[in-house]
Length: 160
Image (spheres, rainbow, N blue to C red):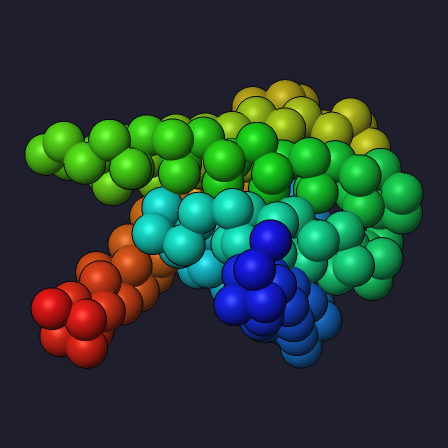
């Protein structure tokens, strides 16, 4: 990896960790709005540096989770699979690819995190899925998509 890529990994890692820890009251539990997940769709344009940064960020941030090592490992795996899948779909660059990529990203996070949180909290699976999906809809599908669009416009303006 180039030094520019390593710097991006560090940036994504630190932004993710800080956002989760500072907003811990809404970053954990079944009904959560993990504001740090606004960064997840950025894997579409930043690729592997964002994917690695968001994965490492989840690993570190989830040590603050009340759910222990299951959340540390499960959240990291979920972030890796979701951001990698979004990158694969989003870089195909067909009409609507970003929306589909972010929706799939949300579904992956929902299925993985919602499942293990339902188990840990002895809640019906549908409750876990609904809680995670709703929070991810706000952070990733709305906030992340808007951030992605703004950054793309800024990148085009600075690098025509």
